[in-house]
Length: 199
Image 1 (cartoon, one colour):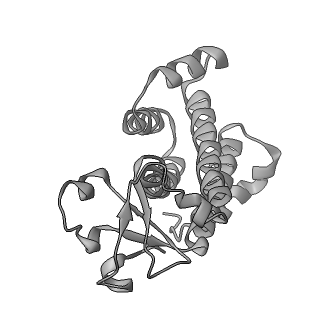
Image 2 (image 1 turned 180 degrees about the vertical axis):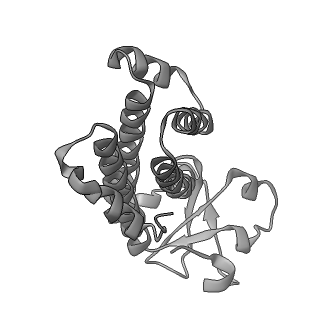
């Protein structure tokens, strides 16, 4: 996973948020990975909406409108949690909470990619740098707050999102009483993957 610049090369020179400087022209292998990291998260959000629809019941179009009217991700997660607590048996509720904790972690990685400040360093040519806007307010920059991303770091984020999507899809199958969950098979697979006990 990404490492702070202070651990990779403490005295590296840094260029951050320089508009028009051709950052990704210098690093052309990164944009496809960045786009895929964002796209893979959007798949997770679509399955969260599917779970909300199943929990709310009633006309699917109405449930989707309710979900989409909730603008903040934390509020959407809270709505899913409230519906799950009110409607699901304990085992399913615990499983969904565990999946949503993973979603919260993945969302943090996505948010920095979507809203962070990009840069690079001439001393480390095969990486890009990413940090929060607040880091750019003071100079010299705090190198411990600037993260160093290699190509593999984005591949890990993409794979984490793919794992999350699969978990959300499996849980939606549980809610829909899909044949794939015959004999609680999906429960068992998810609990094993999330290292949960069955009590």
